[in-house]
Image 1 (tube, rainbow, N blue to C red):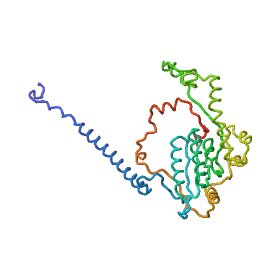
Image 2 (cartoon, helix red, strand yellow):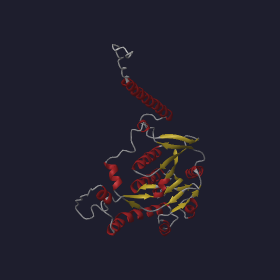
Image 3 (cartoon, rainbow, N blue to C red):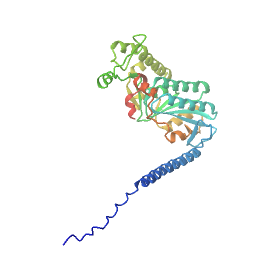
Length: 336
């Protein structure tokens, strides 16, 4: 017998391909919708926080109450927090100006948690504190929280009194400058040979494109390091009148000190906490009660949404990365 299959039977057409395009499209739309809702949600939270913070239009400083008291007698707390750079110096300067203008502010506490930073930025903050004292007569207290080394001590030296937490680290009086030598990386790894055309032999000292010589080190030490160091010592001598220059020089070898060592060496006036700093401010201002407020930057909607990227790399960033920087900085303090 032959095959029982019907020779005239037509094969069924192949199944139509699944239309995955629409699924992908709707998936993308759904994903974008979820992201948009999250952005809207956080934007609404941001607006709410801004309203609660009372940041009205044109307001440059926000006051956060940390201790109740009469509004006619206020103690302002200004933070010097993190590595001291130009941006921090600008923020501190604007807050100092607010304290100057407010007649109800009777004293200012500079709450410092900083390993130091740029010599220019540190010096500008010191200058603003000195002007605050000279122009208004308002007492100033430095309160060292956790760490106030190098530039952090430099700014504190301008204050009438220094209070440090029992566990605070301070000192590191000195100057540091470092930079990267990229010669081997460029020439041996990348095959790039820089060509430098300059008007004089010292124009690019020190350069990242060749090792630093002893002559260059001596030149930089005489021209930059020593003057910056001498200024640091002068600032401490002016601020800590009970210490002679010789005593300061003995302490100014870059060493860090714990609170007890700093107190014994007269680098600070008292070991205590914020309560002691507030008590010192009241005493110097001759007041018995005060409202203590912490100055803060107004809420920034732009910063909240992260539109300013910390990873943004431009020509200025590259310049700072490859150019030696004079610093009043304790490098190890960057870990705090």
